[in-house]
Amino acid sequence: MNYLSNIVWPTSSSDAIRMQEDMAGKIELLGNFDELKLIAAVDTAYGKNAGTVYASVVLMSFPEIQEIERVFQYDQVTFPYIPGLFFYREGPTILKALSKLESEPDVVIVHGHGIAHPRRCGIASQVGVVLSKPTIGCARRMLCGYHRPVAPSKGSFQPMTLKSKEIGLVYRSKENVKPIFISPGHMCNLQQARDIVVRSLRGYRLPEPLRLAHLFANKFRRRIESKKDSQHSSNGKIV
Image (cartoon, rainbow, N blue to C red; front, side, top):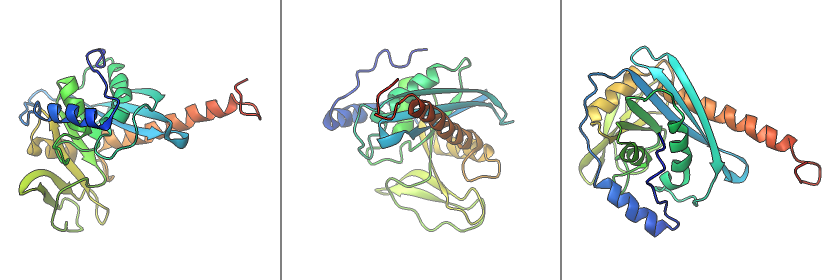
């Protein structure tokens, strides 16, 4: 499916924020995962000088967490680096990669935030709204909000709040390792997001689908960048 067909991408930060605020009004925080069988995760990596973005999607069975499929996409970056607006920088490539999957995932974990965002609409939420599919944000850093200290033991957690409203969860996925930040993206509530992420853990900090997507995105980047380097002559021109 071509997820990009109906999107008019903004060219300025002000237009991007207006688009993001419009998407925020479309977010649903309820979902039904009775038939959850396929889970996808997506992550990105950047090439030299951050001029190219590389996306990797890994599709796995749930709850077994066995790999079924992996796909890749890379494109030139066309939107500037602006914290809180990553969807407009990485989204086109992420959506192209997701459209390459032969099987439709029931839920997508995105390396980034869902509603744990200053405008309550991070990249995971925006991917979900565009796809009309349940999405979960899982990040390694907090973008906004507050949480109490999380105990060092595995399984410890604290709610993440913004203006007295719960927007996510800070979860210690591995003993004495920095926690991860989980938030619902779209068509999913916080309890469901937490349950899916926790059940996808396999001994590492990140849930296994996202960990593999992260590894594959960087391997893909290195492979393509190496090919690019080999195509350049000593004077910098392609031969």
